[in-house]
Length: 415
Image 1 (tube, rainbow, N blue to C red):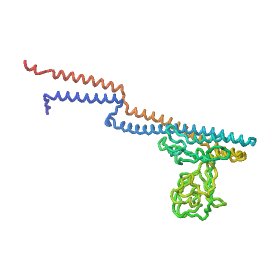
Image 2: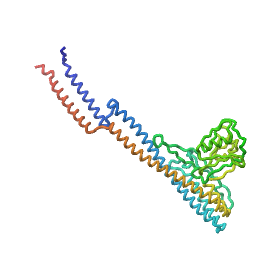
Image 3: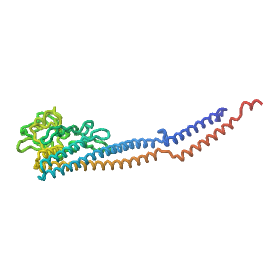
Image 4: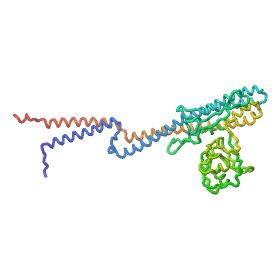
C-alpha cells in the first residue's frame, strides 16, 4: 500500500531530528560538566549500581580513617601526660632512695618532703589534664568533670595545709570507636587504672559461711555483671567471679571466712549491687546509696593504693623523719607504681601504632575504591569532546539542509 507523503512530513522529520540532536548534545554537555558519564540510572544501570555501592563503602572507609586520626591525636596528648608523670615518679623515686639511706637529718628530710609535695601537685595536674576540646583526658567517659578531686589536710611537719587525699570523679566505662568494619578500639582513659600503683586487695571481715542468696540479683565487679541466682552460696559467687574473665580473683579467707577480692593488675576495684543486695549482705560494700569506688564496707580491710597514695605516704614519712617507712613501704609502692605506669604507656603506644596502621590501610583502600568508581562512572573526556563536535557538525548540516528545503517563500508565487 503506498504511503502518503504530506506537505508537512519533511518539516516534522526535520524538527524531530533537530530536537533529537539537541537532546544528545545536552546530555554530552552535562556529562562534560559533571565529569561523569552517568547522569541517570538508565545511562548504565549496572555501572550505576556499582558506583552507589562503592560510594557507600568509600564513605565508611573515610569515616574509619577520620575516627583513627582523631583517636591518634587523643593518644598523643594522653601519652605525653603519662610520660611526664613517669618523669615525675622517677624523680620522686630518686628522693625516696636518697631519703632512705639514713644519713639525712630531719631538716634534710623535711626539705625533700617539700619537693615531693610539689611533685605531687604536678602529678595531680597531669591527671586532671584536659585535651584541646576541653574534655578531661583521664576521667573515663565523664569527660566534663575534673578527673581527680583533692582534699587538703594538716600534716605534722608542714606549716601549711597539704594534699591529704585524692578522689576519683570519673567513670569506669570506656568508649569503643570503630576503626574498621566490625573492629573497635577501646579508649582506656580510666584514671584509676592509669594512676594506680599496686594490686588492690579487699579482705572481707564478715563470716560468709552461711550466706545464701535470697533472690536473683546482679553484682557488678569492675563494670562486669555477675548474675547471682536465688539459692547461691558464697562459694558459687566466688566461682562465678573467677569464671567471668575479669582481672579480679575471689576467694574465701581461711581465718575470717569472709569474701576476699584481689585484682590481677594494678587498678582500683569497683563493686556495686546493680540489683539486690548480695555484696552489701556479705559486708563488702555499704548500702546502694553509696557509689563506687568509695563504697567499701567498714569491716573490709584494704591494701594497695594509687600513685597519689604512694607519694603522700612518702611525703608524710619524710616530714616525720621515718626512714624505715621511706626505704620499705614507700619505695615498694613507688616501684610498683612506676612499673604500672610503664605498662600503661606501653599499652597506649601499641594502640597508637595500631591506629597508624589502620590509617595507612584505610587510605590505601580509599584510593583503590576511588579508582574503581572512576573506572565505572568517570567520563572519557576525549571521546565526549569528539562526539560533541560530531553532533555540532551534524546539527549544522541539518540546519543547512532545512534552509535549502524551505528556501521558497510567498514571493515565488506572485510572479
